[in-house]
Length: 414
Image 1: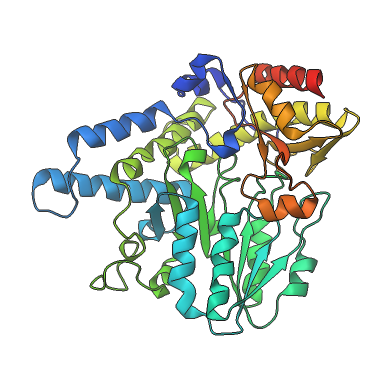
Image 2 (image 1 turned 135 degrees about the horizontal axis):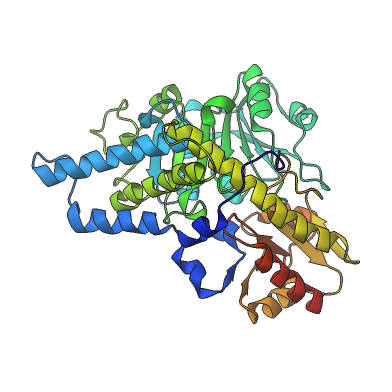
């Protein structure tokens, strides 16, 4: 796939991210990416020209309402959702998944089951474990310790006729392994259950297509996809309609997504996120999509070019780490874009993870150590101490030179 993908216009890409001009190598992107200039422009413009409450009859309020509707439409385009009402905005994926579990709680009877995966970030485990207070039984779908893969045979062993929901990550923020969400979704639906996907670690690297995957719920964080500290939860329209109201008592159950956004989402950040889709559409045209092509085609083409460039970066880092005696890399050994994203975690014999990061800190290289809120997974792997694992998480605005700087720094300390 990488050989046939369009080439990334890296000069254009880096020009859209003002923070990159500092010379600091941002290699902790799974914790939060840098923000697009076009996103900041939209946030500023919203605050300076339409900073009023929605729903009033005067013109500025009507303009503000139109901008929020545009944010719903463009986010639906970014996720390939069927309609803008399927887009629920909120501050973080963690909060939105907690909202979802709370709004869904009334649909479970004592003895009903939820399956969570060992690969997941706590955001897609904790809210479902909280349903144990309602009599829900929570089971764990274990993963392949070496590859980070979740296998359907193992899921089949934990699912029963009482399973109502399977919560799973699309890509592990530790292993970098991509899970086959379309196949998992089919498997879950064949057994009359629903699926909730945490796409936070996947969405900065590949096109999201909730329609093609037929997922019931899908969450991602914009601040890891080149936007502001904001997030979105997709839900199928009928599924959202069935959820309980989380807002004031007088908000009707059919008011979606309004009933699931207590206190309203942040207006200016929602509007700013339009800049992400705009950037991807422009990038798609830069790498060869004709100007008259549908925006979604341009967006998907941009992601294809992004994936190909990231594979080059990941292959370089993985090759180095796998060649070092005493270094264990977590997750797939390959940089194949269908198998992993360029989030690379490792441990080194005899060298504490925090010592490695303290060294790279002095060289203007931003990587990190710890459990990255996937504590259940890191503890299960046996790396649950204070230092945890080292993680370098690359994205498409990173360069081969930055990876080489990191390799040189690691070589000195490992």
